[in-house]
Image (cartoon, rainbow, N blue to C red):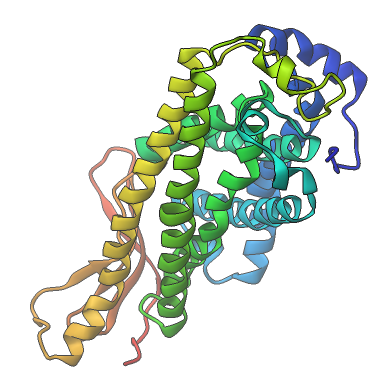
Length: 361
């Protein structure tokens, strides 16, 4: 299936990219560099301009009063929401209409190339390139785990331009099917809907989709790609691909017939292991987080709350002199909502209130 993106790569941009593509041995990169840059620029514009513009008007009592760190996190979640919905829709469409995928053997899955698969990898690489820049600039905010995820994901999807396991691009991007629910869960906290029924139902969808898409589907597809790469690593004859596939085969037009280098298999599979390990770790953290959201409500119903012990919910670590969160008394009432700031000399702690309200039973 040819690349369905309506705008072809400008010849000048392709020519400028070709030296880099040759150096990195990524011959199909010039065919999709415009899609990478288009995606990166689009997500940057959403994060810097569109999200602040719409969020300030849709949530005028909340978004403008958030501290800078939380506003950045908000805008990043908006980008993640847009990206996950759009890329998963495209991937599912490609997997449905691309008839060539249904008959491919391991040789085609490892060495083959289709324009539609390259488009998915281009948009995915563009997002993870943007994600990598954000994580590098704000590593104290997003942490080393997300930085490792961005690096590993960018490597995995960039190798598809070799082409190498181009077939699995749409397959692994379906990890993102759980991301909309993850973003909604975060937004419920910021909209003061922590512990609400909508957040509870969303949490069920989140855990179900994360477990199904990342742990079950992702682990199964990882085993498949491990088996295919293992077969490619043990080709006895470097010319077996030319013998097995005709010169006119479009899918195999970029296949060189050479064995897969050991370093390439190790880098790809190593990155895949990193991603899967993070998924299992994050699943445990998600269960813990969702459980905490509703522990206070259950404790109140059982009469186990201690009046003298206030509980900090929605709290975050102190970053750049700012803490945002909600102080919740044991009797279920919000005592103070807002954020605290430390002055430039680090001597005065100021609490900025944004809302005081009663939690509904």
